[in-house]
Image (cartoon, rainbow, N blue to C red; front, side, top):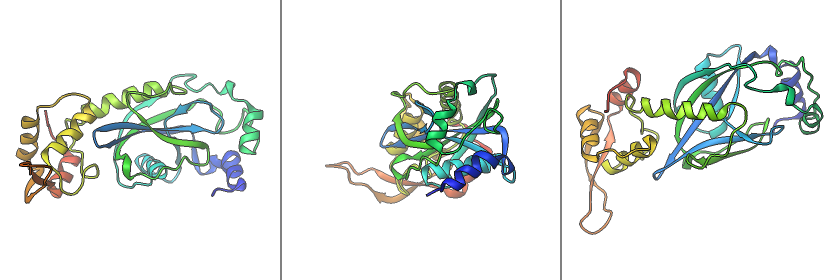
Length: 258
């Protein structure tokens, strides 16, 4: 539990540790059993929902800051994480609308217009993918709530985060044709129909099951196991697993699935 003294130190002296005027926002997509969701938070001093984000420590790389932020919100480490766009339009965050008295009542520390948090800020967008059933959500000390929303039933977001989500979703779906996902999204052993359902849900479009799975096998990403899963009378599909070395190679170098 963060103390009031720690909140005071962040608000008043955070620029000693974090880079001012540059932040990051993370579109964290969650998949489970053919459902696609997005993680949103509600800040203490903001009425609506927005993407989770944070500042970059002066001592850390940008990608490390994004990975830290994602882990702090989900409790999951080592997720598939990609930078997708930088947002820096003037007035993307309207600081003049901040209610200083409300902020003080909620945060317990006064904030003034010359504070390091109050200025035009450039935000670097990242997206991540996880199995939302395995997450343990933590809103963080600046937020009151953190929750998963169905991708097709999102509320209107604060700031320019509606644009961020559109860009993140578009980029993620393009890049899914070039990166094999699923190592942390599926059980260690899975059927071809399960990995097909994963990609089909993430892409939001129909995929030919035969051609798609044949391509994965031809690329050496999957290996057929001497095991089957019984799912009903006369239905026992073979189980498969990822070839970890080939999977990691494809993540680093990219592939073409389409």
